[in-house]
Length: 104
Length: 401
Image 1: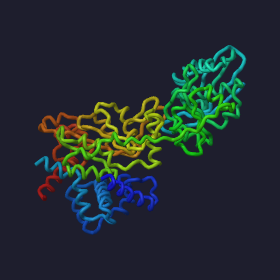
Image 2: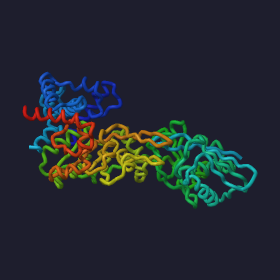
Image 3: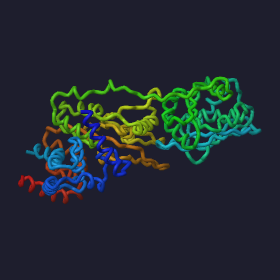
């Protein structure tokens, strides 16, 4: 597991160095502008994210947070672009789904 | 009858250059220290007197003035003993002025003339290097200071006499070797966790992307156990990160045996820790728990039971934690995986309404409204309208799903 984590972090480091963002080390440090550049999902992912943003009332911050986690999931998979799967999993880690299950 | 040497004062993790000037003039016999010394610096008068006596040098029967310049920067701690005594020895012609001109010095003196360890040797060595000088430091701090760089001249002396002998060329001090604390055996392993596949997956994601994590579950579900095992799947610190983390720990006086940390820190402050303990501060600003967890993991248990003020301080994790003091304003590094956990409340909303956590959750999760107590909304009247709107929205989405 540690090896997978290290590989994902190495991907991120190389990407940020290539973009000239020296202060960033992990996806969590990533600023909005660069995030849009590196983590814009494919068409299906975008569609899902837009739909979820509507349904869950995601704020702009929540939107970016989801993208950030989705980028990490793609990194763990070694995928070049963020796919629908990654967006879906990232959304599942947000609190809303959990809390709705609790309320029921 | 004049001597001077450089030293460093710490403002946060930054080391500011300070010059110690000593002048011996005719007049009433006294040793006076000026330049905003705190109590520990003022008391160095006795340690300096005794240390000089111990190596066979008496205090001159003259008026000795010690000035710590710049005079408006407060000087704190005991690390000024050594520069004061060295400048004094130059003024007394016991050491040649050019012998120490290329050095800054930090260290505390014992009454027998030995040099005791002080916190902050690594930032001091980096600060000294920035001034284009070497560093004279206590022997116990040598291996820590040596991390500042290959080309930084470090003199790590156990005793005042060994320094004098070094300058006279009788017995040269060797450059200390940098040491890393490679102690991975003590880290709890994720293998101890049975099952919990989804929790392990989330831990892996948080570790890979450096994301924050909120764990919710009943007592005994394994939240703390999982949290304690997060550092074991984080990659080791790079050389640059090691320096960064160790600088903070050095200032807090937590580096053991002058070794640098190679593993990421895991901090789990007790849930009753004060705000100052968490974010640092005080009249002598010191790094708090969140700074000590820089590039590592900070565990905040049960924020629901916490005072809302410090909940907010760590609510939005940031790279730097600001703390203001009337006299100065500093930003300490704070780049942590904030790992909060909260016991799920089994009791009904009557209990929940009384808990201050109702605010906290409301504030930390602006878009959560499903189970917020009415009491909390009542106490936040301005948010109430917005919440009602959102609640309607959440209801609609719930119906849609």
